[in-house]
Length: 408
Ligand code: PA5
Image 1 (cartoon, rainbow, N blue to C red):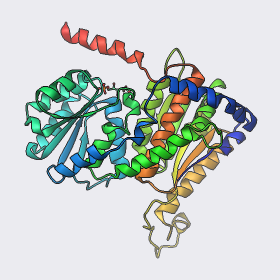
Image 2 (spheres, rainbow, N blue to C red):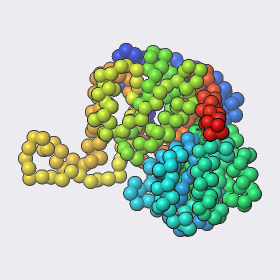
Image 3 (cartoon, helix red, strand yellow):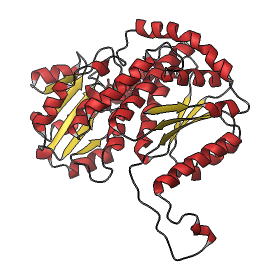
Image 4 (cartoon, protein in one colour):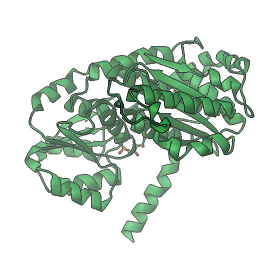
């Protein structure tokens, strides 16, 4: 269950949006949906695809590997980092999922030193099949182990597709009409997830339910549209920073995943919203001072979990002192949620725009739903801003210059 509560917005001051202003955007839903469909983007349809090929492969290799290493970057890595951090044990996952998401030599070398290559599976993920960082990682590790220990996930053509065919490497496909940052619910996210024991059928189920809402022309049903409309209206009044602040460590890297989605999709033509990722309660002692008393250029998006699935308590204590008495016998789950309410209350009292996405539990279905909700919102936001949310021309120049500097 995912609930979106934005009533605090109407209490914000300078800038503020009214409920009427927000509801007035409802007449745009049908047109915007038509525009998005015309762009032939598959992110909201792929969740209906049959994952049995992925499940079969995962069952076939089960128990063979201690480490699974993803070689990839950006949209080919961030969704997997989020899936791992949200849905697996933080300290003793098996097999372990390692994701480099960079060409940092220190990191690569240290990983190399720790791997048992006979029990390591490399998944090379690149839709284009030609991203230099990913190819550099692949060229390095391919010298270390047999080609049977590689799997590719790639588009229909390019270096990886050709190499996969030539060397008979098991290859899964990224659908042509799904871009990297929208691909977490394709083989890009599903294959690694299945290999580390995540229930991908439930992940897809959550995605399907939210996709139906995304396709609804009803304002009250369409959570993605509501969220996009809020961001656009606030942006028109000077709010150009989105702070996503989950109150659970498990969703910390969901905020990182969303940062890429928002930045790369919407930052174009001089327009855009800057993503910031925060963590409750940690950043109450780092960033919240700024959010309360700093410039009125931010909206805070809280992610709240109702049931943390833990009953551990702060123990009772013989010591009687006003500094600790209120903490005695309090469940940590109650503490973290009370701190969220307190931060939200303070931010609201300061008149700052904030809203909350609340889930009953951290599980596959809710994560699948959240991925889809934010992907859908990003597609709608592209319509509001009248930009193409699905391309990324601004990263091309850097790629060209890297090549030039290496060649000279
Ligand atoms: O969202 C995107 O398209 C990008 O962030 C890509 O995921 C990233 O550049 C990696 O591209 P590729 O999957 O082609 O290696």
